[in-house]
Length: 47
Image (tube, rainbow, N blue to C red; front, side):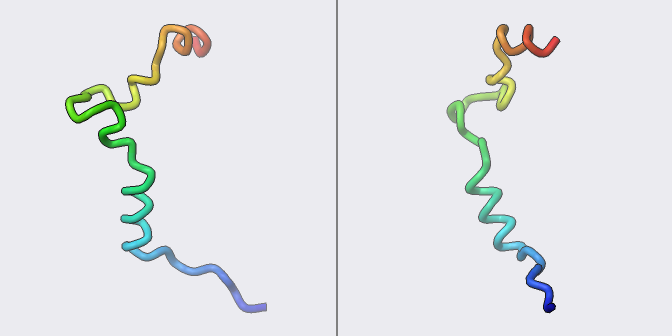
């Protein structure tokens, strides 16, 4: 049976990085990034 797997191209990786990036999610001046998701409730849940 022939293999159906293939290597991902650089262009595909770049496209996925752009599509899935959270850059700018909380505005242009945001400096915390995903730390914005850490709420007091979440912090207490995972202590």
